[in-house]
Amino acid sequence: MGFDDVTGARAVRAVESPLESARFGRTVERLTVPADSGASFSEVREAILDSAADVVVLRYPAEHVGWFARLTCLARTAVFADSLVYWRLHAGKGHAPEPSADLRVTGLAAPTTVRKLVSSVFGAYGNHYLANPLLDPDAALAGYREWALRSAAEDGCLALECRGVAGEEPQMAGLATLEEGTRTEILLAGVISELQGRGLYAHLLKAVEDRTLARGAAEVVISTQGHNTRVQRAWARYGFEPVLTLLTVHLVRSPLPRERDPSPPARER
Image (tube, rainbow, N blue to C red):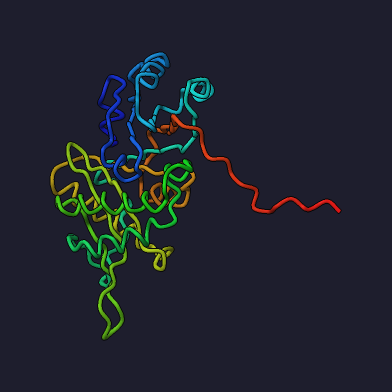
C-alpha cells in the first residue's frame, strides 16, 4: 500500500494479497480506507463481512477513533497492529549534511547484498505482522527482503557505501528502496545496526532527494510505525513534516491461540 493508495483513491478498496497469502500460508486481503474519502464504518463493516479471507489487514485514518471498538463486535478477532505515520518533504528544502569523501551512493542490484542489508536493518523492526500470533515473524522479514529485491530489479534502490580504512574493502552501510511516480515514496530505508548513530542516515535521505530533483519530481514521502520515534526525529531534523496517520487492524477469522503459562502450577503438599 503506497501513499497514493491512501490519498488519491476515493473509495474503500478490498484487494487480495497473493504474496502475503503464499508467505504466511493463510489467505490475506488488504482493505484500505483512503484519507478524505468520506467512507463510513458501514462500508468497512460490509467489506469485512463479505470477505472470505483468513486475515483482513485493515488500514484507516486515525481520526476514526471509535472504529476499533466497533470492529471488535464483528464475527472476527480484531488485533490492533500498529499506527502508520506518513511524513513529507518538499524536494529541495531538505537540510542536507555536508558531503563526505568517505561515503558514496550507488545503485544496488546484487541480490545477496540486498538480502544482507535488509536483514541487518529490519531484523528487529516492530512491524504490524508481529502483532498477530498467527503470522510467522521470519516470514515477515522474508517479505521485506522480497520487497527490496523487487525494487532493486526495477532500478528503484540506492545503497550507501562507506569507505573502509586503508587496505579494507568498502562496506555497504545502508539502503533505500523507492517507488517513483509523481512523487518519490521511500518504501524501505535504513543503516545497518553497527553503523547507526553516526549521521549516515541523512546522507541516504540526501541521495533520495537529489534523485527526486534530478527527475523533476517535487516531493518525497516516507512512513513508519508510530513507535519508531528515533527515525522520525531524523526526518524532522532533515526537514520532513508529518502529514497523515493510519491505524492497522488485523481481522482474523479463527480464534487466536491461547498462550501457555511458562511456569507449571506448584503441587499441593
